[in-house]
Structure formats: structure tokens, C-alpha cells
Image (cartoon, rainbow, N blue to C red):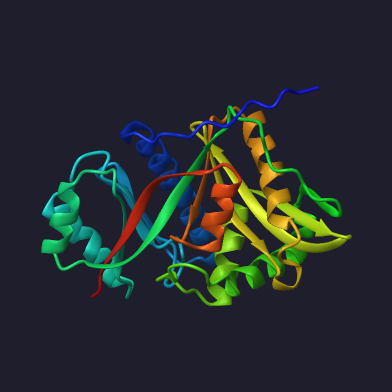
Length: 283
């Protein structure tokens, strides 16, 4: 019998934030390369001051600059080159900036005409704690293989296009076609997929990626007809167990501030670690 270890709040210093941001850079870059291979549309993954400027197609959720603030400040020339690269593809330069990063960056971007357009919260859970959510009766969670992908995909896309609307609305709204393409790219990039079945019906899905001890929980969604029945708790419990087995020490979820997802993550043992601001400069 396994003894449950009590949960303690997870404190995020700049070292932990840097680890999480490196994992994010690796994730976004890997998916962007998969996107280029799938679509044939040339993109780019350009290193930038410890982070990366990524183009994974016009309108892709993965087209953005990530991970800045933990490896120095980019020079004006480096930023100008990145901005030109996005403009050449008809895309704005969108930068996700962690508030624990270098404080000089925000002023620098403001001087270059970047506009604050939104926020997202990064929440984490110490995987030393084992008081995980328990899957409700009637919900089965399993790894989802390639043979199930075409059935799994529309469930997750429908969930993404019908989000819970509590809290601060997301500044990013993507059509179903863009979400479907992004999910195909994340699958090609090797993210582990999970399917949740409610009374035998495919009701939700989620993804997991582990790197540098960070377990990134992504792609979670429940079809609207099956919500409020414990599907997300079951998916979370399965991924926590697998993340621990993979040797990770921290699990990470990204949510909108004040959203139902944020509230549910906190109820399930995740602590608010830091906030990312989205700063955009349009052509």
C-alpha cells in the first residue's frame, strides 16, 4: 500500500522559471519543425537570448517568441531581424514574456512599439506529493495510440473551440482548422496522448511531454456534452502518475487567469508560479 505524501506549496524562483521556460522553448520548437515537415511550408526556429522566435505557419498557436528573459537581453538588431522575419510571413511579432524574467525586457519592447494584449498563468505541482485526484467511477483513461488519433482529434478540437468562459477571456482565438493542424503537429512531435472514456464513449483527451524534469500538461479538453463528470480529474491523475514514473519533479499547466481551468488546477494541487504577458508588435 502506497502512503500519500501531503502536498506542500511549490515556490517558484528564477531558476525554476528558467527550467520551465527552457522546456517551453523546446516544446514549441519541436512542434514547429514537425509542422514544417507536415505542411511543406517553411518556418523557422531562431534562437534569441536564451529563448526562440518560432514560426509554425500563419495563425498557428505555436507562432510566437518564447523563453525570453533568462539568457540576457536581445540587441535591437537581433529583435529587428526577428520582426522582419515575421513580417515577411505576414505575421505579427508576438512575445510571451514571463514576469520573473529580465525586467529590462518589458521597457525595451515598449520602446519598440509592442502592445500588451493578454496574460496567461503558469501553474505547477510538486510531484513529490502523491495525493493525486482519484478517477471517478465510470471514467476510464488510457494512452491513445495512432490507431485512435482520427477519433481522438475531433473531441479535443471541439473542446478547444467551446472553452469554459469564466475569468479573463483569452486574447488568442483560433479557428478549428488551426487547432486541428496544431494537434497534428504536436502528435508528430511525439507528445503522449491520453483518451478518457465516459461509460465507454470517448469524452476527452489530453497530452503530456516530459523534458529536463518538467512534465508539461497540454491539450486537455472535454467535449461539452460530457463536462462536469470528472473527465479532467481522471486525465490529470493518469498524467501525474506517468510524469512521476518518468522521473519528473514538477508538473506544469498553463491557464487563463481566473478561468475555470485555473480554479480546477488549484483545487487539484497546482500552485500559481508566475504569469506570462503577451506583447505584440504588428507589421
